[in-house]
Amino acid sequence: MRAAPQSAGVTDGFSSSLRWAGYALGFALGGFFDGILLHQVLQWHHLLSGIDAARQDIRFLILTDGLFHVLMYAIAAAGLWLLWRARAAFAVAGADRLLFANALIGFGVWHILDSLLSHWILGIHRIRMDVDNPLFWDLLWFFVFGVLPALIGLALRRNRHDGGGGRRSPMALVLAVCMAGPLAALPAPADDTVMVVFRPGVTPAQALAGLAAVKGRLVWSDASDTVWAVDVSGGGDPSRFYRHGALLVGNSIVPAGCFNWTKV
Image (cartoon, rainbow, N blue to C red; front, side, top):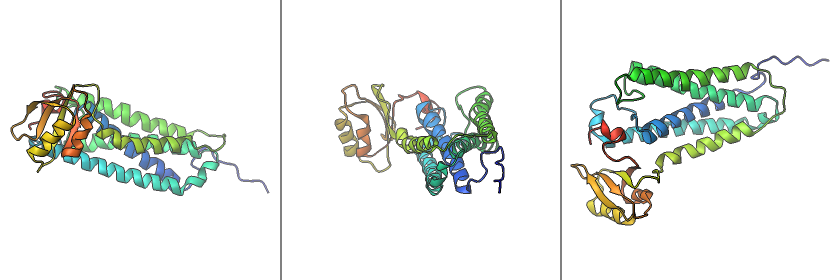
């Protein structure tokens, strides 16, 4: 008896666990990419930067950013669990390609949904909060990081793949997910001045102990004495502030980045 011919789509014969693992991991990576690059590296916005009441307190903005990352971790964990369930599929031709294609679709869908919901319907933030024409940046991000990856993923799924199975895509996705979150917490080492935001309830003694631990010098503080600019040219490790009550350690001095349009 002749075997039924395989159709052109690489999704044929694969479980829903494999397909949804790609979607979930790509979606989570889209969220991590947004949070790490736009919230913390470029500092163009926080999750709730478009809400006037939220912008009054940088600590609240940072808290909501953290909760956002927790949600992305939950989605990533679900994706990793689905990937583990579907691990046997990678002995079959096309599984590696399908996972990568669906991850691209998930990554693109994240940015499409973020644009539609967060930027234009709810208005909780825009890609750039400090420009005269935020729509330009919204549309640029929408097409470059949303529509384009999704279309590439769809094109990859439609192409026949006749090679053997592989594990490069799952290994790369697992590595990317496991690295994304910790990267968000690392202050950049290249700047001698860092911004430190302390958690509510941190005592002056705790904060000063952190200052001594990093061999730093206080350059500036806000009226509440919970947001500091610290000179760390003495060679200390700024991340040690986290042991002394810091909520965030970043490398932007006031009024750069988000602190330029956020009231602290």
